[in-house]
Amino acid sequence: MLSSLLATLAFFSVCLASPSNSSSLGQLNRAAYFQDNDPAGNFIVALKIDPYDGTLSDPVRTSTGGKGLAGLFAVSQDSVVVSNDPLGPIRTIPQTQNEDPTQPPAGPLVITADIVFNPSSTALLVTVRSNGKNPGLLYAFPVDKHTGAISQSSVVTPLPDFVFLFSMNFLSSDTRMLITNPHLGSPGAGVLKINYPSLKASVEKIITIPDQEASCWVAYSAQYSPVLYVIDAAQPNITVVDPRNDEVTGQFDIPSGTPGNGGADTKIDRKWLYVITDRPAAPKVEVYAVGRQGTSLRSVQSFDIFSNVGQIPGWMGLAIWPSTY
Image 1: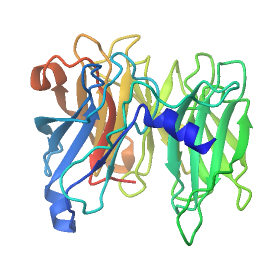
Image 2 (image 1 turned 180 degrees about the vertical axis):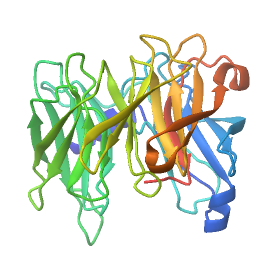
Image 3 (image 1 turned 90 degrees about the vertical axis):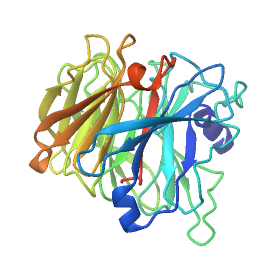
């Protein structure tokens, strides 16, 4: 079961090992990454982040060694991830973006949406979207604290309120996480409580995202931001959620978005928020300066992907190096 779930998600994910990091190097040398999902040969696009104003420049494309699926983007959060360990130049996992992934287990599973370790790395959690008629599923796999081995046995929690269970973001501890549910007509998000040692989950609160159609991606870093930013794939807006009371505290428009086309992923780095927009004719990476306490956003750059990178077929996933959690 674990290998099938991981294979399903790995089909849409790329892992990067980044250059050796020191505190001073990490402050000056920063980069953002996304993948182009080209079926003729998938590439990672690396963008230099200015350490002083957060703007993007100098795109570099690096082959993953696999093939993508153009036009397929609303599939998973964390489809591109980076490692901060000192393993030398950027490298990719060669089997990612394989055209013939391992068949997922039979049953009502539709697609694996997100996979994360809890902050203490004692459990691996996986979200699985249903077909809209069955509950979404949260799989939790214990991790051996001595060997780091992931158990082949899982604890499964059905979540009837979240049939399109999508992204996960832990809220500074092992016990609470924000999840999204990009299903038209649903509230859009919620907070789960993870119980230990059982690893069973329960709904702590359902959060209603105003005008939500497809609340998918969330930017959050306990290190840098006191709030969460929820991005809708079908609405050009950014919704602010305060994890201290799990309430929506604001909403901002994405200037380059259009009705029906919202964001395609998001990340926060220090005092800047990055949002990939999914406007097919003019995709961009919007860069915002985050105000005090995260309650205001100021546009500082609209990085045009086609003008700077070329006419690539897709733009999926967003990761920052050094990684921020």
